[in-house]
Amino acid sequence: MTTFLGMPTVAPRGVGQLRGDEPFPAAARKALADDQLRRNLGHATRTIRAKRAAVVGEVPDWEELRRAGEAIKARTMATLDTQLERLEREVIARGGTVHWARDANEANRIVLDLVRATGADEVVKVKSMATQEIGLNEALAAGGVAAWETDLAELIVQLGHDKPSHILVPAIHRNRAEIRDIFLREMPGVDPDLTDEPRRLAMAARAHLRRKFLTARVAVSGANFAVAETGTLAVVESEGNGRMCLTLPRTLITVMGIEKVVPAWTDLEVFLQLLPRSSTGERMNPYTSLWTGVTPGDGPREFHLVLLDNGRTAVLADEAGRSALHCIRCSACLNVCPVYERTGGHAYGSVYPGPIGAVLSPQLTGVEDNASLPYASSLCGACFDACPVRIDIPSLLVHLRAEHVEERAKRAVPSPEAIGMAAGSWVMARPGRFRGAERLMRLGRVLGRRHDRISALPPPLSAWTASRDLPRPPAQTFREWWKARAARSAS
Ligand code: SF4
Image (cartoon, rainbow, N blue to C red):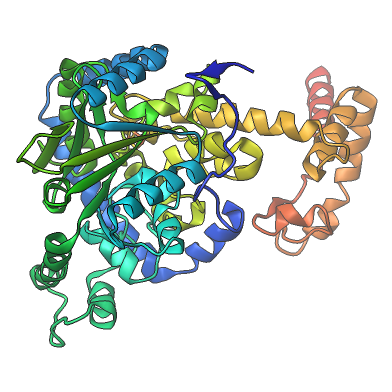
């Protein structure tokens, strides 16, 4: 076992919210039956795709930018230990405190202890995938601390007792009427005549959140990037709620996955061009907040940075799979994915849905704990084309599928698929066996005679016909046809 900054490169003990209650195919089947969900998703992803395509088309050197982003990430991952130690030194030198968390349990305990030390019983939160990944809100609630989401979409999800279904637009599965109903039901003091007009909904959320911003003593955020050379953290957002959380409370706690570090400011320049165009379809983010340690008389007086592993060092140790750590969470791959567009994010079970979730979640938990996700893809390659840092997601999915097959091969009791493959290989190993199998296949002509296809077979073959038909076998095999053709030409 190799070690990384003293951390063992193994799957973490408490992985947080990275796996669902049921495998993807079962969850996807339910999602596909929900017409409203499909309408909401289709409309939202079409709109974001069009916005992204327009602003990406404006940049003549977009491909060069993508290659630069890819190269910076690869270089950073190759020197991650050095970059993180440098980041730690710089944050401490500027008055911050750095904590290292091996897994979700450890990170949650660190944050809860820090909040308790301030005497606060509530925190305001900036939208953060890392804190969702570790289930921080639930852990804080169990410890008697209320966590208030302040990003509008996260607020909708929280008030609706729901789960996020998209990395960037967590309430993408909701339409305006549903959001109004949630606000009327759950938001204290909301105008009972609230309509579903976007401006009215935003004003209701604004009034609700303003009270929280002004009273909160502690804020919790994630980070989009951390610049190692100066110990500077960066959060980009569209609403300004993040800026409120990052500046008003006395104590700021940032939970950041260790892969978010970049070596220098010149590297940040590349990502601040790639991220907004790929995510919200904007030329630049409306709010880019940067902070370095603490500054007397300006902003929080205490700053804590929690550096989260939670399986990342295990991903880093996998040479073929480590490029998944290059992800900047823009969600462009979700918006172009035909599977995501039809099933939505909940079917993936993990806080990371869509193509990158189908890679990252099994990598972070260990493939066998999320074994159905690498198959939740048609491998069409649209995700690779859209990814601003050129992560080859289809190849990563195939790599994980291979890992899964290898794991299954080690089992004492082989799976039906393995038995089927072994039987197929035995039949195809000898021409005589193959001829016999072809003759047997002819029996299928009886089953398919009515509709010219076979729609139902007995178990275990029923697993195939449950979702697709088999064509009726032809009256003549290829070999018979070839023989007859040769005989005709000879005569
Ligand atoms: S894999 Fe690429 S496209 Fe998908 S969220 Fe990450 S950076 Fe964006």
